[in-house]
Length: 143
Image (cartoon, rainbow, N blue to C red; front, side):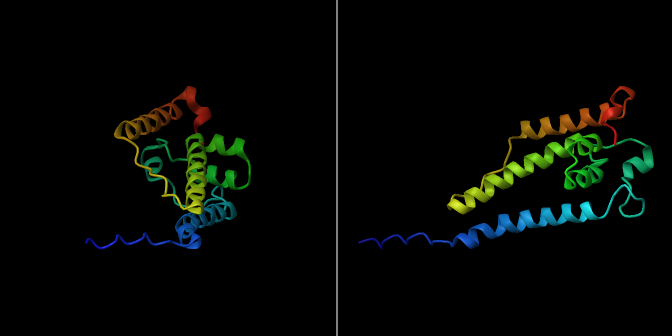
């Protein structure tokens, strides 16, 4: 007679919520720091190396200024500093909400494994964003 299968181990709600809560706390801490230490003041953060060497704005240029404005609730300024970063903030917020709800309910964590075509699309969007913000007609997208 085969041995009975072991019952799956019940994991406490606190343990299920630990990793998403730690992740969220880390991001909130980073935003709190950027919100407290103004990147618009020189000397607090390093300059983008691509911008320093070439004068070309990369897709991340203005991201700290965007995070600072976002942390202060100024969405218009955040979008002006780096619109692509703001889209990322909201995407991360949706992912975190899903992860926390699923952890609370005991469901497995959301699987974030986009197919390669989505990574290519994100890369293409970042490239187009970078090119446009470096051209005269796209100066509204420059920080």
